[in-house]
Length: 396
Image (cartoon, rainbow, N blue to C red; front, side, top):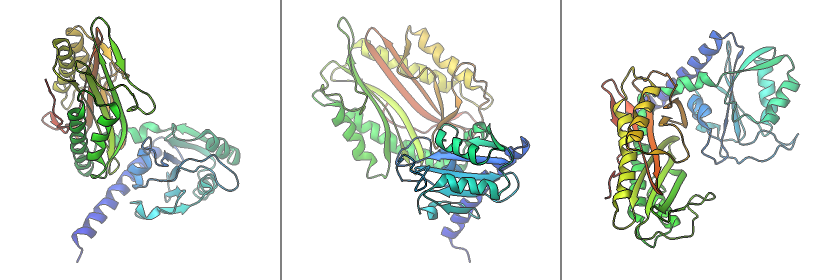
């Protein structure tokens, strides 16, 4: 008799196998020989999504420059999905047992490029067009070597195949995103509470880490900014690390933090603003403008709406209050899952929203030295939306 644990493992393996088959079917439809999928790991939390989506694998080994013939392509993993034939996962560390790969053959090699080259030959993918998914993570040194060793093979762009598949989440992925958003919300609550006069950005950041680390979650980004508006405006921030500004918070400052991180591979992403000490009306106006913009965007989300429609609703609400774009991101948001991706909530993106999509809706605003930042994560449902983030909204 199959145990509950065995049943869960079987269901998980079947889900990964179905994803690989869907990607392979898309390659066949384009008359490609198959797909070469690449992801990066090495302790970073950026661009590992495709291999994790198709196999569950992540390589923890850091990037080191190629030293052929000893090693090449470290910190990367490669999945070959032939149009007709068996998949091959090439990894650089003996962690292959962590992959939910089912019947996929796994090769561990320090020279991963050599193993990929041999795999392409063995699966009859060396003479024709192969789709490349993960082109932004594929090192030029790997492309150059593969095209040199396999001169009759060419690469076609195929990032959109994985982007499209990953846009709508499975019930299991939704549960993981719901859990990640809950943990991220508690971390941001702790940070906002710590943003008191005399505290440094680093001390505020530490408050979030004390929540995340026991929960086995990792902070990926913490965009921490404080300042003061009015006749003598100032902005306090630091780039590397983003929590490294030395000047402590002062009574009358505004403070904002946008954080993102990972729990079990799936991201949380949210932002809040707060006064430091007693609030002033111009501070509150900026905070409320950011909130109103995001709220208007969320109100426009429903199955059949477009990404552009959500962006236009949110940006329109911002402009109606007399604010310009703030922050480092010009859109109103994006899809979220194993990374950031489609659909992008920007004017002109006519992607139709569907149940199972998980979206981050965000807006930063600025005026007269005052700044507001706000971001929520929502699930598109048959009825509209479900809010996944739960951090306190107003502290004024």
